Length: 162
Length: 287
Ligand SMILES: Cc1cc2nc3c(=O)[nH]c(=O)nc-3n(C[C@H](O)[C@H](O)[C@H](O)COP(=O)(O)OP(=O)(O)OC[C@H]3O[C@@H](n4cnc5c(N)ncnc54)[C@H](O)[C@@H]3O)c2cc1C
Ligand code: FES
Ligand code: FES
Image (cartoon, rainbow over all chains, first blue to last red; front, side, top):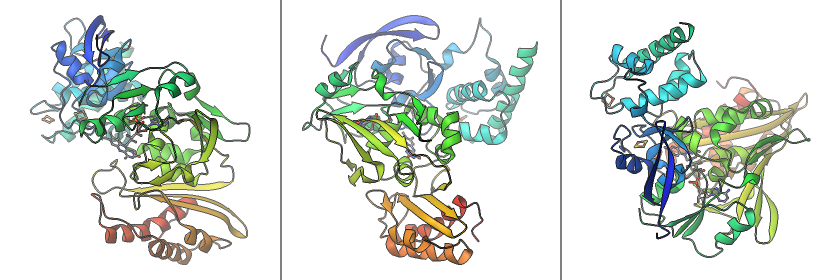
C-alpha cells in the first residue's frame, strides 16, 4: 500500500467498520463509501454546518476533517440518531416545529442541537443562537429552528423524568 | 487535493526528525482547520503532514505558581473556552472565544495552530501578545522562548523554522490588570475580524501606570500601538482621553484594505474601537 493511503477502522454509528482511505480525503468523502449522505459538503470551508458530524461526541465539520484521522475514533452521523426505528426527540421536535423547508441543512442543525443540549440542557436564546451561528439555512427557517430547539430541550427533560 | 503522507510520531524527537528546515511542503498538523482550507484551495500542496496529536507534552491546561496559565499547543480552542482555570485567571480569553469562528471550528482548532498560522486576521495573536504571553518552541537545537508579540515577521510568516514546533504558550498572571478584547466583524457576528483590539492596563489611584494595546487585522502582523500607550501613561480615564486615544491610534496606523473593509473604513473603525476597548477594560462606557 502506498503511503498516500491507509486502512483505518473506527466506530460508525455504533458499529465497528473499516475502510481504505486516501490521505487527502475528508470525512464527507469517507462517509460516502458507506452510502451515508446526511453529512454533505456544501461550503467546504467550515462555515455552513451541512457536513456536521460528531467525533467522540464532539461536533466538527466533516469537510475540514481528514478521513485518515478518524482511525480508532467514534463517529456519529444523522443516520445513527434514530434508535430502534424511533426518531430522536430532537428530530421529532424539528418535524413538529416545521423547522425546515428543503431539509438540506437539517442534519447539521439537529446534530448541533444535540451538542448544545448535551452541554446546556436548558439553553437560553443566546446560547442557542451562539451554538447554531455556524449553521446556515438557505430557506431561512431560523425562527422555526429556534422553536424546535426549545421544544427539543423540553422533550429531553420530560423523557429524563418519565 | 493531491496525495500526501501523514506521519503520527509519538515523541518530540521523532516529530522533529520528520519535519524539515528547508522543505516548505512538509508541515506540522494540529487541528487541521487552516491547513484544510489551504490544501483545498491549492495554495498548499504538502508531501507530508506531521500530526502532533500523539505528543503528550503538547497537551493540557495548568496553573503556574506565579498565578499564570500554561496551555499545551494541541489544546483545542473549545477546551480553553470551557476551562474554569482560564475563566478565573484570564476571562478575557474566554470572552474572545465566544466570537471566534463557530463551535465546530473551536472544537477542531488548537491554540498552537491559531498562533503558528500567521494569518493576520486571527483573534488570538493580538490578544495573547497584549497579555504578554510567551510560546515555548522546540527544535533541533533544544528549546527557546519567544514572546507572542515577537512571533510574527510578515504575512503568514513567523519566526518559526520549518523544523520547529510551538510546544506550549504561557500567559503571565493578570492579577490587578484591566483587560479587554474588542472585535469588529463586517459579515457575520463570528466572522474573521475586520479589526481586533486587545488592551491590557495596570491602573491605580494615580492613573494608568502601564498600558499595552495590540491590534489585529489591520496590517500584515499584529501591531502594538506605542503612541497610544504613551498617551495613556500616568493619565486618569475620562471621555476626552478615550477620544484622544482613538485619534492617536488612527494616526499611528496605516491600515491595509482587505475583503472585510477598505483602509479608510478600517481607520475609522480603529478610531472608535480603540476607545471602546480601553473603556471596556476599565469597565466604563465610551460615549
Ligand atoms: C470557518 C472558519 C472560521 C474561522 N473564523 C475565525 C475567527 O473568527 N477568528 C480567528 O481567530 N480564527 C478563525 N478561524 C481560523 C482558525 O482560528 C484557524 O484555522 C485555527 O486556529 C488553526 O488551528 P488548527 O489547529 O486547525 O491549525 P492547523 O490547520 O493544523 O495548522 C495551522 C498552521 O499552523 C502550523 N502549526 C500548527 N500547530 C503548530 C505547532 N504546535 N507548532 C508549529 N506550527 C504549528 C501548521 O503547520 C499550519 O501551518 C476560522 C477558521 C474557519 C475554518
Ligand atoms: S460543508 Fe462543511 S461546513 Fe459547510
Ligand atoms: S431547510 Fe432548506 S436550507 Fe435549511
